[in-house]
Length: 137
Figure 1 (cartoon, one colour):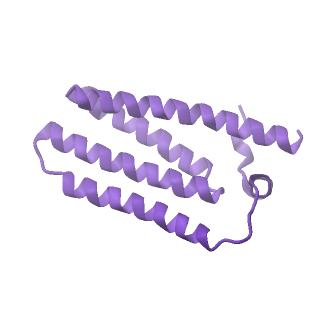
Figure 2 (figure 1 turned 180 degrees about the vertical axis):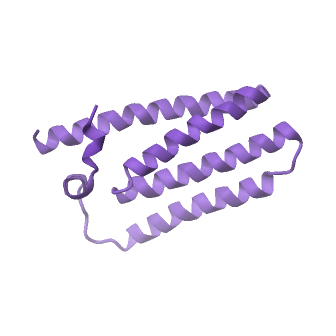
């Protein structure tokens, strides 16, 4: 399979997973907003599972790794805050700490990129390190 076709296949597959992840996250947050405890609690697991799946599968791409790591931490913070509201516990300090960690990770990544003069293309990175198992059905 030509390199461009492989790249297109990888990104189209993960775009679908990312879009599904957004839907899961919206369902979780809708349950939170409507104060449907069971739904909100049950939606934590699939939302985090897909977030960590994306983190793992795209870990070899530096930008994707840092951004997906921040998303995982954001969902953990968001879930802690939701659970605190559901059960009358003060979890905002924990949530704020996790949000700060996520922002710190993104800040670190973008700070490193300020000093990165050599640009590496996606195809250079993918040809070296993308896990071929993601192409399997």
